[in-house]
Amino acid sequence: MNRLELRHVRKAFGGLDVLADISLSVGAGEFVSILGPSGAGKSTLFQLLTGAEHGEGEMFFDGEPLDDHGKRFAFMPQRDALMPWRRILDNATLGLEVQGIRRKAARARVAPLFAEFGLAGFERHFPGQLSGGMRQRAALLRTVVQQRDMLLLDEPFGALDALTRTAMQRWLEQMWRHHRWTALLITHDVREAVFLSDRVYVLSARPARIVREIKVPLPRPRSLGGQAARQASALEAEILDIILNPNPSKRTRP
Ligand SMILES: Nc1ncnc2c1ncn2[C@@H]1O[C@H](COP(=O)(O)OP(=O)(O)OP(=O)(O)O)[C@@H](O)[C@H]1O
Image (tube, rainbow, N blue to C red; front, side):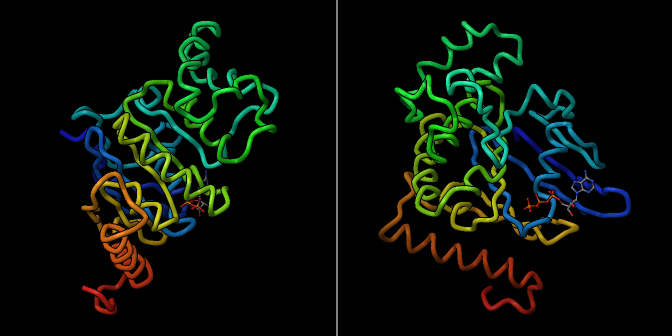
């Protein structure tokens, strides 16, 4: 059974059609990406999932209509959204404190994770004292520690420089293999989607539709070299072609 399933989801803001017809699924323990042009409505889709906005169509979670949005998803926004006046340890506990867990208990739960997230020794630093990659790892730590059923990642590495971004993608892929989170990632970055995902949904420009669902049959751990990297490049080229030539009759590849 699918963990998350959307059937013919639509959303308009006033007269502006943003999501035209979105049907997609994410299986338990699967890493799925949504790839689409800027302004296509990717963030709007996450707002529907988290209950911040309401649309039309059907949404199911573990086979049941999705109603308790807030309890299902842990959401990581584009910017790290760490509070600059709270130490990293206390930023990491924030989601748990919002759930009503006392700070001391929340600290006890997050502290053992600092080493795995590459943040050991930085517990008492403030966000401004960390690099961009470290801040994103802290934001992810704060997200996963909430132990929700599914992670929603909205361009988590979009603001990072290219080298840091590549390092973070490798790190996230390694973490995902270890934890097998059920994850839905929104990204503009074709290479990132292929590198991290089991499947990729390609969105059209607004009003967004699913243009194509692509399986990524590459072995894990994902590799940046050798035969698997050549297969990844071919897949990236195919996806770019779909994005740039959404009309199949004009496509250069099958
Ligand atoms: N609350 C709102 N009211 C009115 N229009 C909105 C609202 N939220 C989003 N939109 C519009 O919906 C469209 C899609 O926005 P959205 O942020 O979902 O796109 P996106 O694909 O995530 O963009 P980007 O990739 O640039 O972050 C945009 O034209 C935006 O102006």
